[in-house]
Length: 307
Image (cartoon, rainbow, N blue to C red; front, side, top):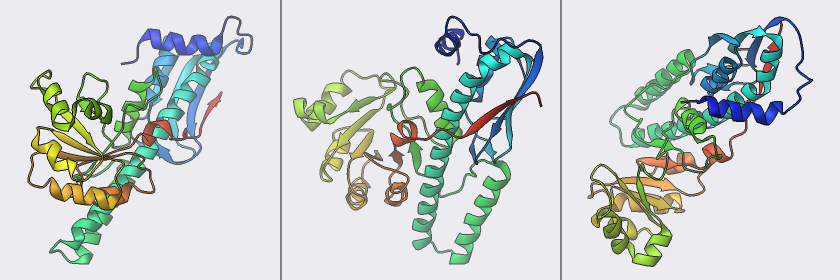
């Protein structure tokens, strides 16, 4: 939920104390337009900015919609001064969020394709049937801009807490718009046993320590850096075993060792668009990527008035 306090903070930062630039009389219209292909996101934040300024938002795409150059994401109408005051803040927010959604969608697509290839290698279907399933999913994405659920859609592409202070909500919603998973939104959503906890308490000791202090409704995600520690963590009570900074080959070995345990396998640590497919092909349940939020370039958007 975007609050008035957030919008006021964003506008105060940009407008300042004596805005002469936007002292333009009369009424006007404005359009937020894509200059490159991507996935739209952050439009609820852009709408909140214009709403606060008393500018009517006449049309807006749904977050998660695929856009091409020239496509209109948002249309507004109101006092020229207020439209112009909201322009840059709205473009910055929507561009930033859309960049995250676009990168997330690309990661999801690469992971899904890796899983389809992996499944086809052990699938009784013919290669042409597997290819047909992949093409059907691609046709659905092209027509709707959304991911079609298939049997291969098992791996989740998740964000992390490596978000911009004050913009976590915007960025996490953008990840969802791109087809990803938010992961935990803050420290209260899940307990993560990290390397420093293990260094202080030992692996089993750290798991026991936090399990005793955790509600039955809160999951325990345990980070391990060695393949052989994965089943140890699961046996000690981890709900999720985070395979940190392992190579794809090491990740595959750890996933195989976890097969007899009721714990999810999560790969994390320096995973990029170039390597996400390799990790998805290992059979992990989750691939978490800090780069979805901290390294995604903004989608190139333009705001045009008077037409």
